[in-house]
Length: 610
Ligand SMILES: Cc1cc2nc3c(=O)[nH]c(=O)nc-3n(C[C@H](O)[C@H](O)[C@H](O)COP(=O)(O)OP(=O)(O)OC[C@H]3O[C@@H](n4cnc5c(N)ncnc54)[C@H](O)[C@@H]3O)c2cc1C
Image (tube, rainbow, N blue to C red; front, side):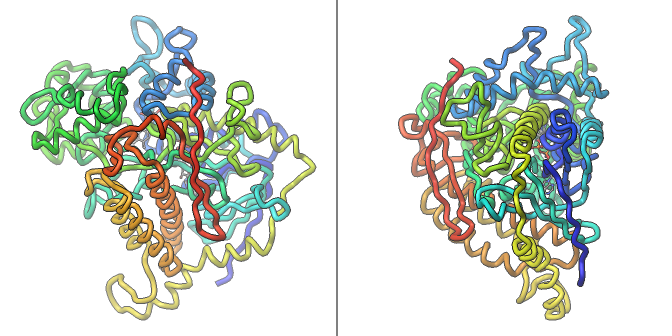
């Protein structure tokens, strides 16, 4: 079938119009008044990304003008939560700019709650402020839409294009329109990837009728990692997957409950169990358990051990707080503003939190760079603050020339959340504009052979299905093709059983990881037989390709780091303790797309803030 090819020329191309992407689009226009700024998004930026449904809190706000916190405090906080390992230069850079971003959100119409006594923003916790955030995303998208030369919605980006003159320089991207199938070739001088995190790489707790219910957005399909990995960018901390303690079956958030409503947890027998596990945790990780606040992973660990000891389920004690009508309202509104599904689950399970303390559980692992975890691309730091070893070019540029990132894409900087991701988009955009202006006469060249080849590869699943579909008369299993859902379930099973998912109690070891890599290699071979009945399934096919590559990267990193740095996120049973002597470092990987090999190395952690 003949398909239209649409060529788009841009100075700056932003891939993904979520929080990071909208921030990048907005700021690119500020510094690059005359530049062509193009944002490309697989959904519609109005309601795309992890903030699609809205949020009830902005989790990263310093409050510097009220002297509430300083950027250094945030660096200390994130470092502590990540058991010592964060890129302090990148974190500091976000923290010093994030307040200005939040003030813009308010200017653009976001209702931020105020403390009636002080007039300041209403704090949920030390770093969080409370918002009426159902329309958070449309509001941020409006700013990006007004700033962009063009926004291309419904285009799934599948590959980055490289400069035919300089193999380590990016030159654009290709993708297809998920509604009409048009092929898009974007030629750009700089590319900012802001394509979100990765859910559905580990088997989720919710299967069967609940499939699709995950904590992180189900449409976060690892493009943020696969696109740079395929372009040869170095990745960091990909082993640092996140596991969340959440309300059972609906993944409802617990932040407002712990911080604002002051609810607390107990085991099935009404006991406080966290203190009970302190000494054994200290044997595993040393003094980190005595830090305040106790790192998120260690709190997960105590919960997991308590359940293993047979004293589950763990419950959140809501009965006391919900007696206060104000707190009861906040408790429900918290869900209605961002996770309506949890309210529905409670209703369907006859749970009234005033009468019953609801159960908590730990989620399957996710890979992302903006929450309490820091997987992602290895990026150059700010000129005025980063140590020399972390600087090789422009701020937030990856190890590929002209390729920038923001939000979940960039590694080493946990706890940026929605506001920090938008801020990082702004930071990346400012640097990308400078990159483009300083190289105004040096436009990268896109090779026709390269994009024509990619065009064939991209649509192949439609062709494979068309030719083979008559081999079966009913059902979905074919001798000649694999449907994206089948591939996804195979991936989730491998990751779950070999790389530390829920079925394995988050535990793995070298033999398991080695076998996992063999099985992933076989899955990768079979991906050339993906069949897609329609464009929607073609998108699923490419999301699967991205998830598989990112999963391979996660597995390589998990194998490389021979210690258990974050118990509660995952365990290397063959190296059960934290080992600061050998592993107080970042792990870096680089994928060679010609040979399919991964190179691993360590990079130093510099502590800039005392
Ligand atoms: C359940 C949940 C609760 C959260 N709670 C809070 C909270 O209370 N407070 C807070 O501040 N933060 C919260 N966060 C975190 C916040 O949502 C993220 O930190 C932030 O959205 C990350 O920004 P991003 O730009 O990296 O990714 P996203 O905002 O997810 O944007 C990624 C975008 O890329 C697009 N995309 C992906 N792949 C492609 C592709 N191949 N081609 C084209 N487009 C693509 C996606 O459609 C999406 O629009 C929460 C997140 C989740 C999931």
